[in-house]
Image (tube, rainbow, N blue to C red):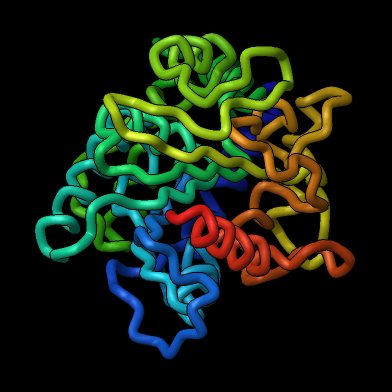
Length: 322
């Protein structure tokens, strides 16, 4: 198991240098049909490796452009690449407050979040519901991710290998933050992996239960009211770790997906773990990278185009008055 975890870490560190990025903080100026023109702007909230744009490649590959082309106003979060969701949530709150202060007329946001971004967004909606119109999570491990338990076991806290793991991953995270122009302070790799163990996820869920299913693998509430603010909740997920032989991430996810035993998963998040709010669908033929149209738009040729999911969802939010 230690060789597996070491290999996974090596793959992850190699991929961080070139695969992901995100859109810059900018409002759309493109001609629009209005199909994706939501009442409240969209804030895209990244998972781990949370950067904006590195070497011209977006974390949300072509997603912001797709939404903006038909009328949406889109922002992308500036948060640590590696940190716990509470710390990242506080960074996001500061950014949302700043946007409201500098863009008259913006009251709240539709948070659309991938992976850990879902927990980051859940924190924000619980402590600052006045900022949030809706939260949508994609492939978010709300009940934890087996790979985190493996990493925490192999690179145990207080051991030599654990200390090396923290040093290397924190350094990579700081590099990612700098390359993407994010001045958000130092991250914490250990707090990240600890949060996504089964025990860590349970602790987070006890503190912030809104929107989670009341039964195992059930569906959460479609909306919640927090401090007098009504918030709509949605989620969707993939259930196929390997989708395209040309995509380098597929080989990583095909390996990590084995940690789920027989449960359908996207390579990181189990199908049931992804459930939050209204479950749009939890079995797309997509892996954890396909959910954000990575790498470079490579995905299953026989399944739904990831870009169409975001376009359709923006219209869903529009029809809901959001």
